[in-house]
Image (tube, rainbow, N blue to C red; front, side, top):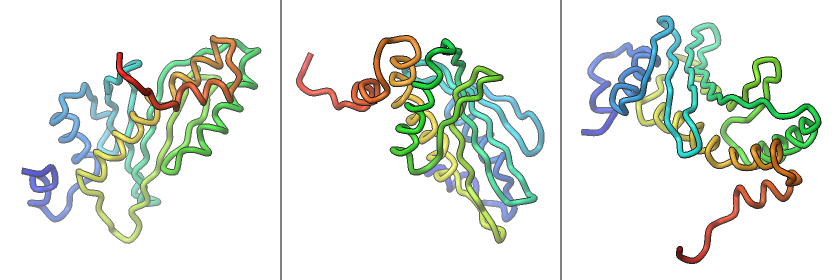
Length: 167
């Protein structure tokens, strides 16, 4: 049975209800913060990512924020911001930013569902997976720039390079 077949038995499904069922399905740790918000922990290869989804009925938007801790040295912030710009040039759905006050790297995405549209489970699952995959893909570049001696261009080349050959 597909994910959507489990959910479309009712006419009015709240997007956060769908997210909660997905979290249960994937066995992710989660907390239903409020009726319109849920927070989860999703394990990646590099680290565990904190993901929050919130529904805003005012502007009919499902907002996703994926974060991980990052506290780069102050002298590396310029290079990190340059790396963020290069990263965001490669991302079509969502964008990274660095929240210095919270010491968090943040991936943000908003799904506008104007006019009473409804997001399906597959669509929401894809949103969450895209956030984690983007964080996983660019995490090495952020690390190489913040704590290594790599330039943003070198870090991006290493982080996005395809592995060739066999080990």
